[in-house]
Length: 355
Image 1 (cartoon, rainbow, N blue to C red):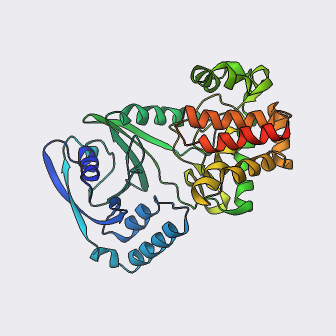
Image 2 (image 1 turned 90 degrees about the vertical axis):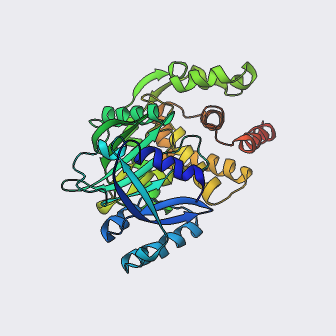
């Protein structure tokens, strides 16, 4: 196990005087700790549910792990032992009768800010806790406040339960959302329905007044901003913008109930259409491995589809589809730090060819 993995979970679970020990089965990926599964079968399955791989290798690994848990064989996996400290995560968890009723997933090793996401047995249900230290603490608090703010307006946000401080960090608790990531056109229709509902609750404003647009203007020179044409002069209906609206942050449960997770990049008033472009670009890029040219071409086809045309008409952006695509690629690259160089080259090249 990598030392940074151990430092991460111990910094969250172990501060303060020792109150007990926790023994968990470990699941590794590329040399890093991915999951720590409790011995309790039901809780181990719930912890495994936190991992929603999109590529076939990850899905196969998850299927094998699920089989092991169902058969009770995960207890024979290599284990880790974790000290439970009096000033760590368990000091603030309400209703957690025993640390043994706990398992966790560690955040992406490639992310600048990594968190611990755990599942535990609450008083009468299963809950999810997300915890971080250092720079992550402010993000944790902000994300929880965002979900609380939207709880009355948006059904798709998880139900909030508590937010609390730990030593040099913060954590929040929400309901455990069960379900699967969307796959295929039928699921895509369900997901797109969310964005239509969010647009219905949006407010009319000029693009230049959006915080996301202002942040883009600060990053780009005049030539790049001019490449976005008349979009800056447009009056749009501005919805809630999730900011990382990707298939792995969405779960479809029983009765086609859709929930959206990870609200840390949310804008209260955002650019319409960017979330839907992000959903498709991330899936084509990270899951399917499509080339930049195919991704850009597919996005243009997407924006010409009947449902998207209806959305863009309602949002006030019809006729500015290509500028919308370019602005999304610039925002996700410059502000959110996604690798967008090749996509932007493909977008600019095809504009030159068709102009």
